[in-house]
Image 1: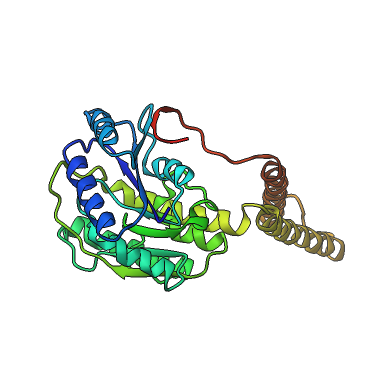
Image 2: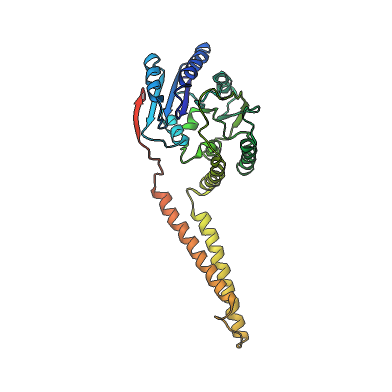
Amino acid sequence: MHLSIVIPLLNEEESLPELTAWIERVVNENNYTYEIILVDDGSTDNSWQVIENLAAVNANIKGIRFQRNYGKSAALNEGFRAAKGDVVITMDADMQDSPDEIPGLREMIITDGYDLVSGWKKKRFDNTLTKNIPSKFFNWATRKVSKIYLHDFNCGLKAYRHKVVKSIEVYGEMHRQIPVLAKWAGFKKIGEKVVQHRPRKYGTTKFGWERFVNGFLDLASVTFVGKYGKRPMHFFGLWGTLCFLLGFILIIYMVVTRLMYPDTGLSNRPPFYMALTIMIIGSQLFLAGFIGELIARNSPGKNFYLIERKLGIE
């Protein structure tokens, strides 16, 4: 199969018929074999009924419905698990991503050899101060931390080599950090393509200002997990040992000065309690690393969410 197109959605009943028709036209013009996987993330409107109607007409349209709203990351993760295409395309269901970009994105994966290609909406129709400035700052910070030089990490329009989506797990709200997850999984050739950004035609945005705060927290989390997820002792043990040694050296210094100068007190001096506190913190960090090591080696680390129905998914 040439393409799997994964589309997470929440209350997008109006846009789905037009979006799927547009995708069908593009893939048929390019003679692609394909599947469209619509992941209903607990919609409260008639989105699932629309998906059932579309799947009845076109067998290439498949559906997954969550029992409740779990978030975009869970929807993408389940869509990735079901995808069979050589190239996997993700896009949003709100018609702001253009299906006309699909051939170009696929070409970069197949011909240019990229593992992941992220869309860059260079010209946007939602350049509000409350959205554009935080987004630019978030992308700048992510570039600096991850060393992946993309302009728009949060763009929903992306293309992946099949092996990439089968090698990563998208959890929490990590959909913003998928390029970082792919890099930590060992996929180095990550690029971007300038794509069209279309004004919203139906519905309202499902994301608020809190996504930027969550984005920075996710960046810190994925960076730590990527480096130390399977070896937490290397982080906690290092800092725990340094703290313990610092406190121990301070205690030795105070004992030596007490022996040299008998009139000098020991337990009544503030540095004594500082040294004890530092040693206790060091011991706690070391124990945290030890416990984390046990958890990392014995936990499968899988997501848990309930799927209510599936259409065309084995």
